[in-house]
Amino acid sequence: MKTVENIFDVVIQQEGTLFKQPEVFTLEYLPEILNFREKQLRAMINHSRQLNSGHAPTNMEITGPYGTGKTTAVKKIF
Image (cartoon, rainbow, N blue to C red; front, top):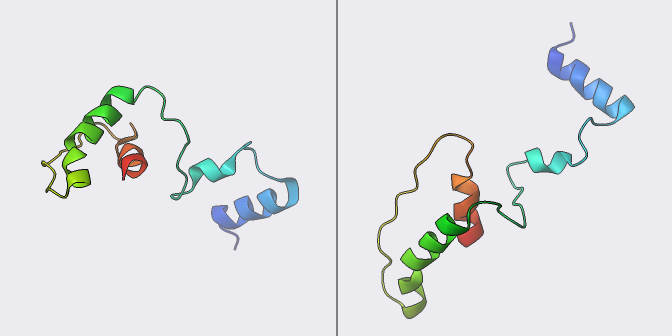
């Protein structure tokens, strides 16, 4: 019996993907530009300045709803 995943894989192999950039759905993908996150990125950079001088950085808590770019922002900075 074919599962939905198997059918999906077969269709994708035969007809190609529906998406222009399927790589954006991978866990490794990191966009070059994070739109609308400049304020948050600046705050993270300011909190991390002590790393450049060899001191321990201040603690930082990243919060927000699912899918708003928290992990992506942290990956972009570090």
